[in-house]
Amino acid sequence: DTNAAGRELRGSGLSYYQAPVPVMALRYTRLRNFADSLSATGFLDLDALRRLQRGWRQWFSLLRPDVLVVDHAPVAQLAACLNGVPCLRLGDGFDLPPEASPLPVLQPWIAQPPAQQQHDEAAILRNVNALLQGAGLKEHAHLHEFYHSVPALLATLQSFVPFEPRRLARHIGWLQAP
Image (spheres, rainbow, N blue to C red):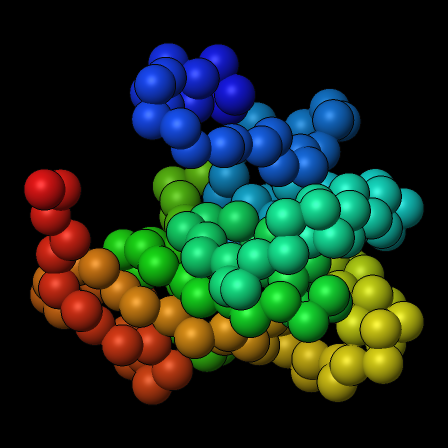
């Protein structure tokens, strides 16, 4: 949000740039599971995902980052992987699912046929793998591998982490603002 960034960074001398974001009608109004979350950011539409990746490639060419630190930014994470930019996930762990297939349901009180979730996860995995293959990178066998393809730091207390076990993530405790 460049408006908020402009207000917060006014007078700091820091530069800020709008990240590529999907401009599409959201398929889901409720995010019932991780597949819904990825779908809402363009992962079900291979052409849209390719366009977003091109936007990120241009962003990386312009800014040449040493590393990209993301919280919940799956499109940015995929783009970093495709463009050889080191990436690190930093967050509370809620958006980092366990290494399981199918991925867990986020809102079990909202009915969804299991076949729909499996269908969406398979379609998203095909799209991710199409981009990985196009870049000459190793494809994923399961969608959870995408989430765990970059190092993760969990900035929360271990007892607050919603999904366990996390063999590929490191707990670092609370981060406090200065």
